[in-house]
Amino acid sequence: IDEPVQAIVDFLQGAGYRVVFEEQTAGHVKVAGVEGMTVDEIGARCSTAIVVGGDGTMLGIARQLARYRVPLIGINQGRLGFMTDIPIDRMLPALGEILSGKAKAEERSLLEARVVRDGVEIHCSVAVNDVVVARGTGAGMAELKVTVDGTFMYNQRSDGLIVATPTGSTAYALSAGGPLLHPTLAGIVLVPIAPHALSNRPIVVPNTSDIVVEIINGRDISVNFDMQTFASLQHGDQIMISRSPHTV
Image (cartoon, rainbow, N blue to C red; front, side, top):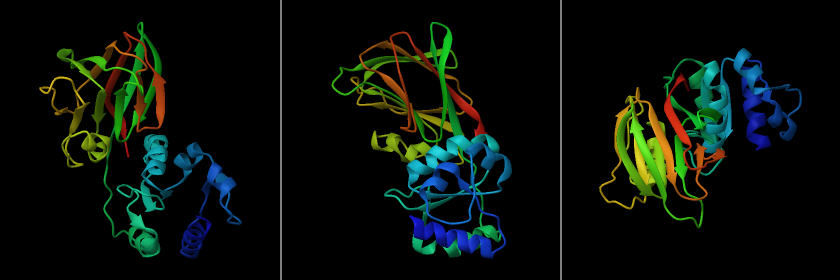
């Protein structure tokens, strides 16, 4: 990855921009004369963040930078390129076009989820793609109670439940049989994973909804956020999901 990063640095510095690295990147990439900053420092001081990697890299940094409203540009150095959609061989012309104003920014919504146990919040995180409640490998089905805006929706026995943003509708939710949502739609999609009852179908609710998923039964159930943050769950735990006040 050193060669494309060096090319990006040379291009940006040649155009008069000051370039910094995220501090962990600075420790791994062999490019001289570029200082490292923490993600919080980047959020407070930088006008744009360029992400070189795959969609997982983009998801991780997007969650951290969302509250700073720093625009993100994704260059694909990984296997998937839905978000990091600029190919390496076109990155310099694309950066030139974007930085000269010939691009349109898209604003994507996030989900915020809190894990509540016995009335006490024990975990909180945000997700660009999805919040997934799922059984462990080798465990039986999970039984989940789902309510939306305080109204009971269903008790579901399944391998789990995907709660996705429009951005996440093209990820795990799509593989589980969910619908594609246009990014500008104000919705949240709920997609059961291998439900026991064939009447449990994917459903889209308004993105103003407050969704609560309660663990009724099952073993080794966990919740994850964009497949990157995990918390182990117990019977009676509630995952409270709503739209985040931040966007990417």
